[in-house]
Figure 1 (cartoon, rainbow, N blue to C red):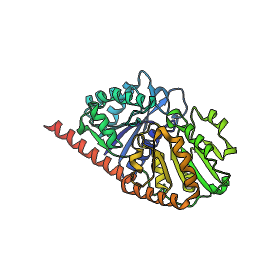
Figure 2: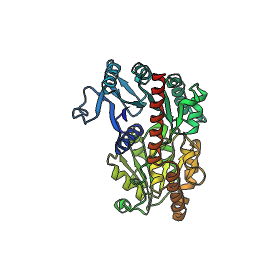
Figure 3: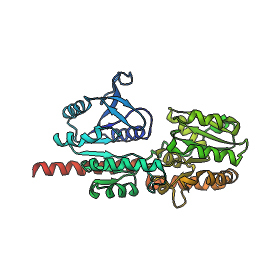
Length: 380
């Protein structure tokens, strides 16, 4: 089977990780994968094109959205015509190209799958979650033209169906983690930064991630010199927050860490992982921490609360992060046996529901059924 995958290689975000992990896993299973990805025409990143990669020109791309060039749709259509894949899978990058892709694939008689990533808060508790809900309203009429749309949870599926996407076109396939790579193990990171108890956040430093209440709670909880909070990631709020919440409080701002093995080392040393987001989809960072056997605290945003409910973590209210963490942080500092039990349960939850292997098997089945359906329609 030949799969044409459309997604992003940069800048680093959940969409990039999803595309990399899924396409690598498909290659490992013997599939032929062509990776069509957005590349700015004046950049150097894609001059050394790897085998099976096709750059699609864009004017701008960020972690959140992409602006394709005027000729991108013609280049995409021409590339698909030449590649003649069995199926097209788009990891949607919030670009205008997402809206015309069904028309292109219909003209070429190619089965088309989308993975729809935008974060959401099912309860619409704030301006940020309301803005994300508008994104779902904008996309729903166009997603109805895709043969199948992959989402990460039943909550997300229900939202799209309520907005008019046919139920039989929306498939729930949760994010998956390579549990052999992300696993409990020894790491010397705690010794490196000289602490006894390690708390970790990993993600963007942006408004929707709700970082400020987390660091305020850390300061108010007076965690002491032997407990440290490590923040992995970059974003627009980093410089301002770092001024007021720094090393004197035991807070380390590591910035973007591109080395995956280094990120795994940090997680393997962590006692507690915190994700205080206002909106989410299903956080890969959360699943990676769970897979490493780390006790997890995450807000009930998107499908994150669903991932850790029932004892696999502690679910926080996005509007009460500061007050809840102020109580919970000292408890988890002083009771290592509690975080150990939570970490064990988190790892078990990932093995039950969120392995990359299970994810790929479900995607394989989806591809097979769509190809068979297209064949039957073309021969009828």
